[in-house]
Image 1 (tube, rainbow, N blue to C red):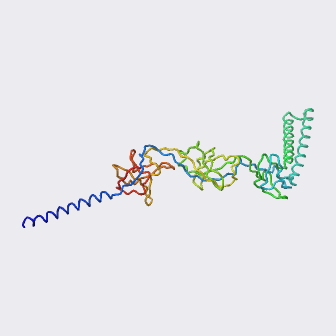
Image 2: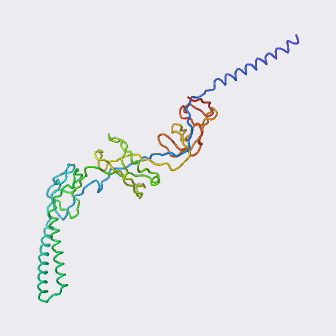
Image 3: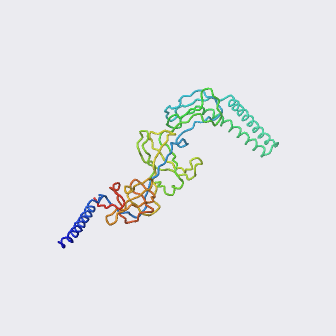
Length: 343
């Protein structure tokens, strides 16, 4: 009976060890394995885009200003605001003011008097009573007085303000009966054809701006998306917006009007080199970007610092090295330290 007493504990220990071994194998078999896609991180930079905002401008290149040549009164408005006009169409009719009539009369009298003085100087010179210098002075005075008279006469013949080119009347700045001074803008005509828009951009981005790529206007108010050329860049900073300016040409038929707000994107060239990964590899945890780097079949979370980005790639300045295998699909179901296999 004694041998049997010692045999029972030995059998119990053997069974316990067998049970532990079975539990360990079961745990190994139940560990999850994520199915993912991997891409190798590459060396290089990323060309990115920048959102810009602007508006269609009113400027000398996009409009005509009809100006009163002399002081005048408004007789008639032939083309009110919003009217489409062709080249040569009458827009506003003016009439000389009383002061302008007086100037014309005075200029005519001055021209006649100066001519008489010149004729008298020539006669005196013929009689030896005047010098050549006196005759020349009288001649110059007569010529100037005649030029003034003719200029006023020409200006009073230009009081029918007509459209220099095709477009539409943008604004009328007077009403019939108004007295307006010389040089006053009476009407503004938006030119038919191309317009110009101004966009603001950070001065720090100008060295990276790809001018040849233009500005891609975003669809707005039913307008289609299109890319337009950049025609000028002004690095001067606007004191209110603290932005530099870039100007684009809007083609005829764009469907936009002066003053309309626009938005678009500009391309920025890559200026730095580093490590790039597909944008799909980037995950976020409360504002902290991270990726999963896979080594020996195990995914490890790497918090990263990102640089330039576009819709396809993102530059990683810290946290990933060139050659690392990063998860690009299936990452949302992965946890740090989890085993993975590729699709």
